[in-house]
Length: 341
Length: 91
Image (cartoon, each protein chain N blue to C red):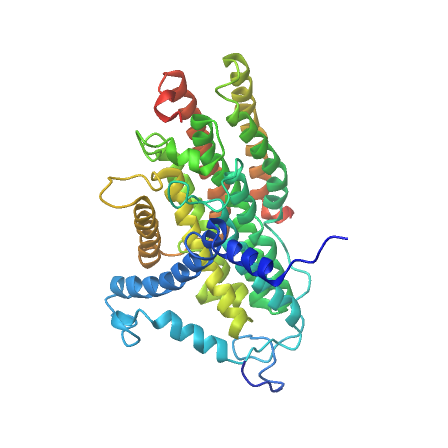
């Protein structure tokens, strides 16, 4: 019979786990703390930038420039009563809101925030991120169905159609990068960009990915699932209190990680002049992409449902396929070595 | 953390202040349903394209072009499916 571990052994094991690099990465920098704090910061940034676009001031009183506003909102939502309609499935709603947040955080595992600064350096990192993103519509549809409210149901259905339609152009727009580098590992893809960023040879792919990304994020001009003027708050209508906070934060987490993905795939990730360390460059680029998406929200109107779906299946898909052909020509011209790892 | 209470008006589903008309889980005309079917088909194709893209440099050129021809052929059924999806009256 093996001897039971002594208290000292257990404590030393716990200390070893807590001080291990993987644990610190999961809890602090590329992991949970980074993602939740950035998502909270993005809610503030969005309100501030949109206010600037509309000649308002935005949050002002909580902290300097109102930067503590997200924390104030979080505390308020936590102390609010959770009201679920009598016809709704409250347990399902709570569970879905929770799993939405978990799904939103999931892609961070594979995204490299710096040289070797990635929780799991997977060889199929890109596929993993896409798999995590493509689970969203089903959970959102469940929220719409579980709310048993007409606005939520319509919002959930619209979200399903939209995300499903824009997934394929999104995948195919990245295929050019996969062909040039011959790998699905995101760290390798970033390293391949040390000569020229992929936004130059894959400009069409970048445009398609950015547009499809906006549609996946359900942001203006593709915010049909929560079109405020028609559907109140879309699939989030019947969520309240902590459930609403989770759903809301999940959307901003998704925005942050989608921008991080765009940075890693097209904008050279952590690469940049050595004035600043790599992770700082990565965060700067990511927040720049986020800001562009936010300004787009302030500047564009909403598109119609059928036009949205048709544009995704015709123009974006054909552009993505054209991008594949451009890549083939690039490789045939013998320019492939520029992006070889 | 907040207090719990029950009230018939507060617990009703939100319908812009009107009295709600009961269940939302009723028959709903999904005129965009064909797009879902198209996704099921082209999703698989897109995933297979990834395996091809990974091996693009390793494969001989003649076999690469076979797949490009396949990609071009795919546009015809895609166009027809889109034409049928556009006719919302039959769905």
